[in-house]
Amino acid sequence: MSKKEAKPKLTTNPGEALAELETPQVKWKVMLQIVGALAVLWVTSFIAVPWLGYWGVGVVGVITVLAAGFLVYIYRMTTKSRQIVDIMKGATDAEGRQQALDQLAGAGGKDAMKALARAQLLAQSDPQAAQAALEAIDLKKAPAVVQDDVRSQLAMLYLRNNRTREARTLIDDIRLDRQPNAKAKGLYAAIMAEGLARTGGAEEARKLLETYPPAEADSVDNRAMLLRAQVYTCVALKKRGLAKTAMAELAAIEPNLLGGFLQKGSSPELMKLAKQVAASVGLMKMKVKRTP
Image 1 (tube, rainbow, N blue to C red):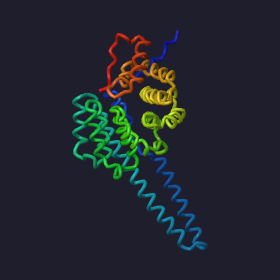
Image 2: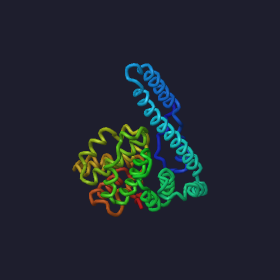
Image 3: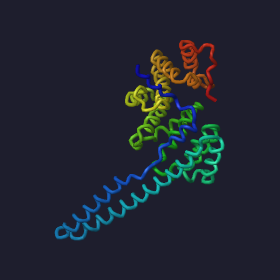
Image 4: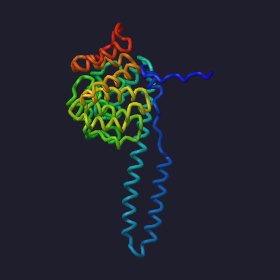
């Protein structure tokens, strides 16, 4: 008899999750392809001198300068990301987390990448401090590659505290096509769908969840986030049965996730559904942990 594969579980140990962070790598192959394309342009421009004069060479020169600047920028950003990830990987316990926070401190909101990493560490024990760290970031001056990360993390904290309008303002500026990482894109979609559903955009949320269905999520964590968004979307669309089904699937992943619907500020309908689901899956006598 073959052994059954272990069922994936929700990430509950932040230290383990940090230790498994993927270290960013410089994409040398892509850079070499760009260099190769520039070389072809240079050769072509000189061949075309008899017809175009040196205007073509000048244009290629400008393109080369811009491309060189872009490559240097990408290299520096990747190197910095790798350094920050290496710091975060050491935060596997309380002592390591404090050391990581100390190394990431000092930049305030001026260094968006460090501030974002610091907020992610603070969120484990002090969500309010994490929120303050994210709010201090000037998005207009932050690198484009981290702007949506900041928006999504801050929107998620706002949603947890029922600050839905503030979350919606951030969500409206998030663009999924700017995120190449599939897991991060799924997280964005979940946060966006929940925010839309809770601020009058239930139909938009429904379409988004059809594109990123919880059943096809690439991680248990993302599936839980998408199911949570589905609950809010179905309630907003008056599809109570589907909302209850999504909530039951959420409870199957982790019963305490129902606590998010029982916190202060939740609608009476959500609270009622959460209590019904808790009873239906045998959690009547179990105290569901409420989200602080």
